[in-house]
Length: 619
Image (cartoon, rainbow, N blue to C red; front, side):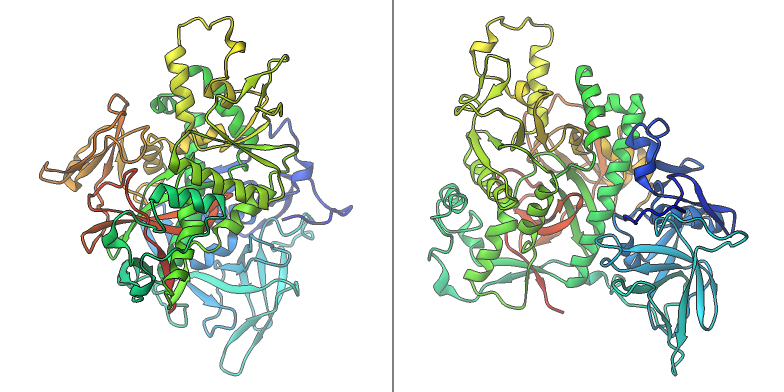
C-alpha cells in the first residue's frame, strides 16, 4: 500500500517498534529503500532460520514472522492479505504437522484472542490487497494490534503495539470492531483452534463439493445453428478451425458442459493465487542455486539474460495457466504453464457464448471475467509504441493471437498481428522492423521461449552467415533481442520447466496442493505410482503414467524423448462419463482470472483434447 509521507515517517527497513516476543516491525516505505542495500528483487525476500516469510516489509511478512517466532507455525504464502481469511490450517514447523485454523466474522460471539490474525477485506485504503495484523491484547472496549505496512510512523516510546481499535459488545455477546478507516472493512479474525463453534463454514471439509458434475443442455433446437459472430475476426478464425459453430470437436459432446460448486471455485481461486507465489519463490530459489539451475537444461549463454529478466520484470507477467486435478480425492496441481499457454479464447469468450446459446441456467460462466482481467493487466504495462503479436502459421494460434489482439486493443494500445517471420526485416541500423517499417519494440508471442532456445542449440558452434542481415530475422533474433520487450518475460522459462516441480516439493514438502516430485525415481513414488515427464514438453508429449504395480496406464509419444525427465506422484484426473477432466485456471498478473476445462478419453491431456464449457453453479 502507499501512504502519504510525513516528516515523522521512517525510511525503508528502519524499526517502527518491537512487538511482543521481540518481533520488529519495519518501515515499508519503498520509495526510500537504499538501492545499494537492496540491489535486486531477491534482496527483498525475508527469511528466518532459512524459512521464507514473505516480501520485505509487507503486512503478510510480519504476520508470518510473528507467528513463527512466537508460535512455531506459519500459514502458507498468499498473494493478497484478505485471502488469509479463507485459510484453514497452519503448518507447525517444529512438529511437522498441520494445525486447524478457523475464521470468525466481525461481530462473532467467539471473541478474538491474543495471537490471532485480524483481517481486512480488499478495498478502500487496502485496495486489491486487504491487510493483516496480529491481535496482542483484547478488552471489552478495544483491542491492540501489531503490524507492518499500515503506515511508516514510529510507535510511541515503550509502546509494544502499533495502534488500538475500538470494540463494542452486543446484547448476544457479539464482539464488534470499528474499522479505523471508513472506506475499509474488517472481515474478522482467524484463530488457531480445534473448536469451530461460531466459525465461518466454507464447506471445505465436504470433499464432494469438489466433484465436477457432468451436465447436458436440454434445448435440442439450438444444435447446428450458428452462435459465433463471423464478423469478429477471432470468432471467424475459431469457426474455421473447428469447422463449425462448436466448442468441442466431437458431436457426442455437443450438448455437454460441466458444473463446479461455488465452494470449489473459491478453492481454485485461493489455490491459484497461492501457487503463483510458491512458483515465484521456487524460481528465485533456483536462480540463486546454480546446481539446481543446471537441472533445467538451459543454454549457458542465456542464463544472465534470465537473471536480468527476473530482476527487472518479475511483476510484468501478463497471464499464465495452472492445470489441476480436482475431485473428492482432493485438489492437486500438475504444472504451471507460465509461458505461451493456450485456451484463453475458449475460456474467455467461447464457453460463455456457448452457455448463452444453449440457454444454460443455474450458474455463472467460469471464464466471464477473464477478458476484463487481461485488459487490466495490459493497461499496467505503460507501453509506448505498437504491440506486435507474433504467431506461427497455425489455425489454433491464429484465433488465439486474434483474441489477445482484441485484449491489447481494449487496453488502449495499437496492435499488429504478424503471422510467421517472413515479413520481418533488418533495417540499416540492424534493428528489426515489420513489413510497414515499424520498429519491433513490444512483442506478445504464441511461440514458446524454448523454440527460440532450440534455434540457439542448433546454431551452437556454427559460424553465422555474414549476409544474415539480407534475410528475415529468426525467432531467436527477435525474442533474444535486447531492444525488444517480450511477453511473457524470459524468466517464465523457469516456472514453466518441469524441473521446478521437485524444487517446489523440497521447499514446500507435503503441501496439500502439490504432488511429490523428484529428479530421481524414489521408493515413495514407486509405492504411490508415478508419472514420467520431460522437463520441457508441450501438449502431453512423452508423458508416461505408471501405477503401483509397474503397469503403464497411459503414454504419449512426442519429440521430447531426448530431454531430461522428472518423476511426479500419480494422481489421475477424474473420469466422468468416460472422459478424463482437467480443470485449468488462468491468471492475470499472477492472480486468479477464470477457469475452464480440458477433456480427453485418455488419461493424458494433449493438443487435440477438447475444451468443454464450465459453469459455477449457484448455491
